Image (cartoon, rainbow, N blue to C red; front, top):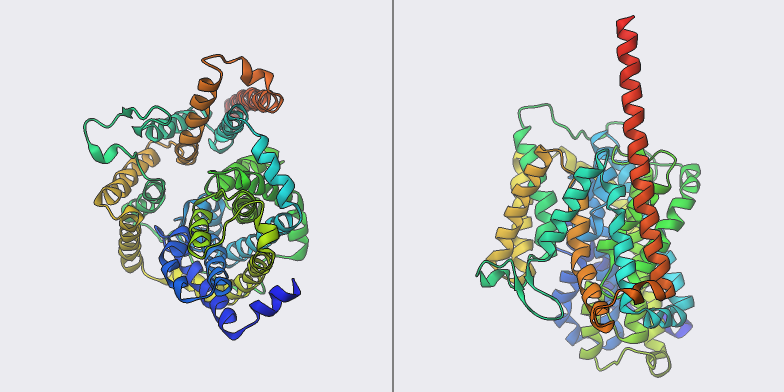
Length: 505
């Protein structure tokens, strides 16, 4: 590690760390762009560098890009990337209540702590965690994704039936395109552009960005909803006691982020929503979630940043990317003639140590850059909506087009935006739909793969220990959710009856 530190502390590498983190934050904060896109765009730039400087730049872009999404998620209720969707649930309401500085401070600090948690586990326990991933079968993967899907009940709000409807809509949309395993086209209606289905990035950005723009335009005649802070706020906007009080939520969310991160194909876009739903279910005051409380921001930002360490584990130890950014990093390994896998820790130990150290240093730099940019970020609330909204729409459109360089993704952005606005008007929650849309392909792929292995039998789902336990957990969550829903309805009816009786007297 000392040799890696000497390699890192050169003028060029220090410059690459600072510039890479800043550019990554910008890519993460701009709706439609992401850390994956940042790494992909700068991958050709690394041709001019040696392998050390190349990975210093790419890890800086990765760290900055994942954290940067919280800025737009909190300030304008539009996630910069799919990794920050759950941050909008409480971050934006807190900003609308005049606590934008506090919301950003919470997100920045727990983003840093989540990253450090994931990196410590990555450095200390990469080989054993990767061996666990290898042992999981298709039955276990299906049960795990199904367990995640049952958390729809946690983000459904007061009306669970509307939440379930929204979740099934998301699942149905995820099934558009060529089916996994057998390659049969479904729901394409003869349109070849639907063969690949709807892309996640423009779909999610449309559901949040375009929907929020339409909501803002429809309410332009009303009093502005978001107000900039006028009081002086010190530090990150919250006390040390409040931070200590979030220890349990932080640990739950970080562990979820880590586990979801090292499962190949999952990533932070799923981790933040699963962690948010889990923390809400575990809370003593779940009804406050979505109103602007600290717990929700802590859950989302801790989990999506902890997933960085989790996603790096299968990349370094197995050569399997855990998410989009690590898929780009896999390309960087190949470009520079390095083969990731079990032998990487013996043949390229100095490079592994440099990557570990670079991730830690970039996280510290990210914390300082975002801290000193806090007041600048908050000033974005003072920009007139007549200027801000068109600029956001242009950035979203450019980001959606850049996703696959097709106009179809731009139309996806607009269609999902209009659909999201209609859901808002009908008071149908969007969060379950996003969860179904994200999880749908994984659930279907692992189910069909498992059924093929068992030759049509469902018995192995219950005979494999891990799968059986996870399926039992899903059943327990469903039953408890419906019991809680019925209790809530009964309490509301009793309150209404008591009020009517009081009015009669």
